[in-house]
Image (tube, rainbow, N blue to C red; front, side, top):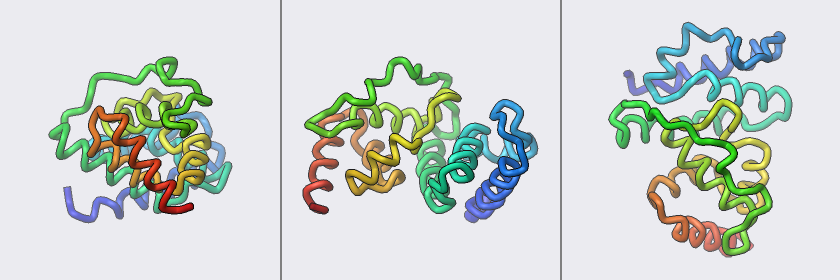
Length: 175
């Protein structure tokens, strides 16, 4: 893998956006087969591309930069932590805490922590997106970049309390 893998991701994202705008709006039939081997080499899959293209076309966010930064975190985790071996686990979306649950008064935090861990590990099920509309609202409310949150979750491991404390500290810095 060359150091400039991001250029291939830019091309794929642009192509996916074009495909979605042209009516290819079924994730299972999204015609990017030729790009799947590259995506898999950096720990991504078809849904990683489809979800971001769909939300960009329909809602105007997340943009290309966010897509790249999030998937840089995923690639690093895949290469460094997983040693390029994909996980065989898949997050059960019914196991996620309710959208209105809170941790230390921070709504959505109990839900986004396991989603972030699953994103890092490549374990999101096809119906769950990291950086969906609800996640984006959490990030805006708490002044956190989605890729930055992945980095904090990676560093914290299984320590939810340190993640919550980091979010509280960030919130206090920006108020």
